[in-house]
Length: 500
Image 1 (tube, helix red, strand yellow):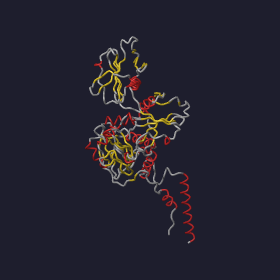
Image 2: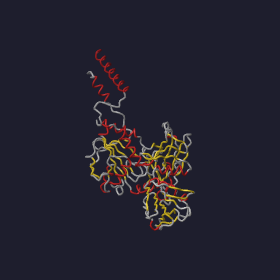
Image 3: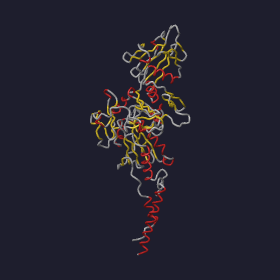
């Protein structure tokens, strides 16, 4: 037997395959090139405009839960990559809701989520073969059900205080809440007393009651403004989301019709009969926080800074100026059934279902799960929980489960590699030959695990600054032990040869 060169032995050891992918490893042929439209309205050709390792996600901008979490997680993956790695990784998001997801809608979504990569759309005819290539099943009823899902009255805030006491509070939204949120947004000053508005922006009702600020409610059936028969604190602004204030001695017919597509609106008719309308397009974590905690009788200090609202005090528990601890926002991950640290502030947390506030030193796994029917074994076959109500009620199934055939209130094991985006989703990591190499389902994966798979593929393809024969992440101790083992093996071989 000939002598084994030491350099060859070292090369074999150093070039030994790294650990397996943490996501689902695939063995598929390359996807075909295709051209769609990005959020800027420009043509984007997949396969020509992509470079290096490609990450492909499927989203729709009206999705209230899975898609925002997924996009935030991918942004976190992007932030984890160093400059060399980032040059050789392309992120692409593709819509499954082309009827709604115009370039303008994708622009708003990508800017709101802080995701600068291409977000692609097209006609349903253009997108169908793309979905087919990636084994993505798109059913409009799934998307419609998801869009219909958001019921702000079902939203809640879980609070863990500094004494480790926890409590859950449902979102409450009355006429005063609507007026106060609108006033903050518009910069109005409010003067109230005994559940009545006395003054708005300095216009005060007189002591002799010659006129008063009158509350009006929009009747969706008659499509007309009607004077409220109850005070503002007794108006359920989730059921009657559009209200108006006007002087009692002015003409109600001058009030403009509200935009019923908005989550809420407040209209003020001033003394000169001009009107000002403030719309709340979507409820955010800020609205849910304030409505739930104040509705529970708690005082809060939720200050507005250059980065939006930030919480400094809940129920007289104030975070110290030295930042020894601070209030931290969590969002409930419905798929992973766990509390996740929110990657965005409360103003950018759009239409959350369940959120939590806790001191930053709190272990999120110790925060109680929000109350749901998940404990009932008869609900969703014991593998999920129900969301929505009435005709829109359906199961949010656990990872690895999906709806039964024609039964959106059941959860059965997934048996194929087809993924129903909207109910769940899938994200692929492709190699430079456009071969889907790794798949991650759902939105509950860990950023560090996904990033490790991206780096694994970059290393295999010798991209992102990874050089042939060199493993940058190999720990020093492992490198040293590898070298020592190599020298030892070489020495044994040399001794054997010398003794022959």
